[in-house]
Length: 65
View 1 (cartoon, rainbow, N blue to C red):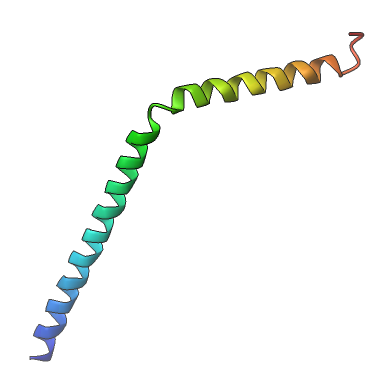
View 2 (view 1 turned 120 degrees about the horizontal axis):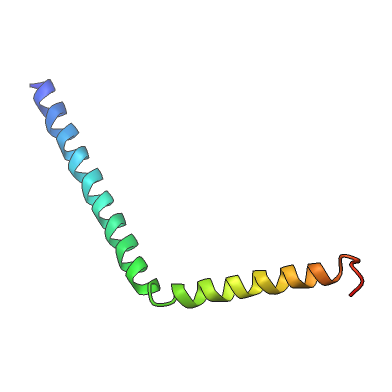
C-alpha cells in the first residue's frame, strides 16, 4: 500500500515539473516574439557603436592623424 502512494506521488511530481516547464517555454516564446521586431534595429545600433569605437581607437593610436 505504501509503495502505491509513493508511485502516485512520483507521477504527480513529474506532471508538475512538466507543467512548470511548459509555462517557462511559453513565456520564453512570447517574450521572443515580442522582442523580434526590436532585434534588427538593436543589432544595427550595436554594430554602429562598435564601428565608431574602433574608428576612435584607430585615430588615437599614434598613427599621425
